[in-house]
Length: 280
Image (cartoon, rainbow, N blue to C red):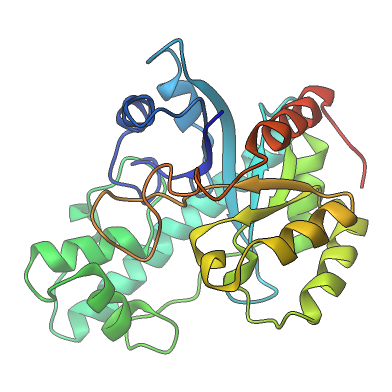
């Protein structure tokens, strides 16, 4: 089995449509795909039916406020999803307002960018602004746009609306989705702090850890893999795919070779998804 459980599309800050992602996944020999756009769950439905050979898991990625790069992935078809849908709608509006303010700041800096000119099919983010800056030849690359203007502390940076960990876990568990900590290697914590946090978050309803992510490569996977399993947490993996061009994320299917227990882990996730709502 080959799986990629962390993929973005044009419904958030990816460059492939959900259908294009699904077709590319099949071309790469993937068997299971999770579409996990930021603050929206529409991608899986749009990708469904592209090929009978690919199983698609609905998903979402939520940004959290407790620390930089703290994100949750939620997996599974949301059952009683009204509280989650209402919160996602609020987050989507906040993203739109944030993008407008960033554009105003860029205009004052001499880069006149109008928010209505951003190419976006779903929830808008800084990546859309960075790409627009590249298209206008104000910067050479998306990364340069982030480094000079859009990252925290840069002149056009505007903080985003984020959920608290406890609220996000309650929302996901409450509608039958499986919450998994995304890319822990990106968190500003050391190897001693992470297990403490994982235990705390598990007590609040966390069900898994994304062990197999490109950011974890330099640190190795065995330690985190062992910690997660010892705590009774699910182990997942994904590329965090956004674009086929080289960027700070992985390419579709990037973690296939490293994720050796993928079949066991995907089956465990699917079984948990099938059980529906879990109480923290």
